[in-house]
Length: 55
Image 1 (cartoon, helix red, strand yellow):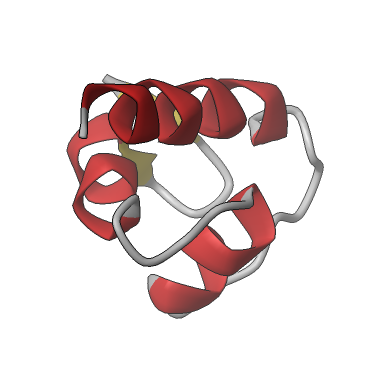
Image 2: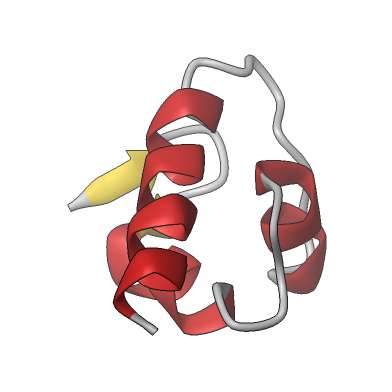
């Protein structure tokens, strides 16, 4: 699933950095970009929270 259309970031990419990132901004930075319009930050945060809960 595409999480961020502006940066073409997919769900598996967010999950891949979830072990080292706790916020969407940290995740985007780890992926070499930054949020642009901000519409995706809630979805990114939910994915990060889900991954932390599963760990």
